[in-house]
Image (tube, rainbow, N blue to C red):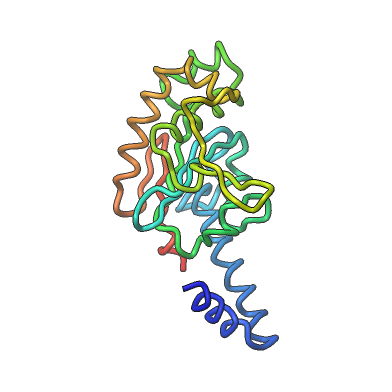
Amino acid sequence: MFEEWAGALRELTATKEAAESWRHNRYEFAHRLGHALTDDRQTGEPVVSGHVVYGVWLKWGLLYVGQTRGAERRLRDLPVGESHHLANTFPPEIWHRVVVVSWPKLAEAASAVAEVEPDEVGLGLEHRLQAWLQPLANASRRTPGGNWRSVDWTRSRSRGAVVGARIDRLFTEVRNVWEEASQAEVAAESDVYRVVFPADFR
C-alpha cells in the first residue's frame, strides 16, 4: 500500500512541469478550504475568529481535535500545513468533514472566562473533547526513538486537564453543539458552529 501511494506521487510529479502543477493545485485547494473554514460564504469576509475548538474527520470517523485562540490564522493554515502537523500525515484532500465551534459565543462561556483565562478555557475544552472522543491522531504521540506512545487522558496533569475539570457546564454546552454539528451530512453553519466538507472544494 505504501509503495502504491509513493508510486502515484512519483507519477504526479514525474516532470518539472507536472511537479509545479501539483504544487499549485494543492495550494489552491488548501487555500480555498482554509477560507471556507473562516469566511462568510456570501461576502468572503472573515467571520470565524478568536477562540475555537475544531475537529477533522476521515470517512470512517473522527481523526483529530484541536483548539486555537487565533482561528482566523490557524484554520486557514490547517490544510496548508506550514505550522500544523496534521496535513503532513493526513492530507486535506482525504478529509471528510471539519467542524469548528466558536465556544465564546455559548451562554456558559461568560461565567467560565470570568474564573479562568480564555486561553486556559480553550485548553480545557480541547482536553475534555479529546478524552471523551479519543480521536486517532491525538491518541498517541511520537517518541524520540521513532515509536509511538499512547496518551492516557485520565492521568494527565496538563493545564488543559486541570482547567477541564472546572468547566463542566461549558463543556456540556460545547458537547451538545459538537454532537449536532458532527451529524451534518452537508455544509452547515449556525451562530456558534461551522461544518465544511473538503470534497466540496476539490
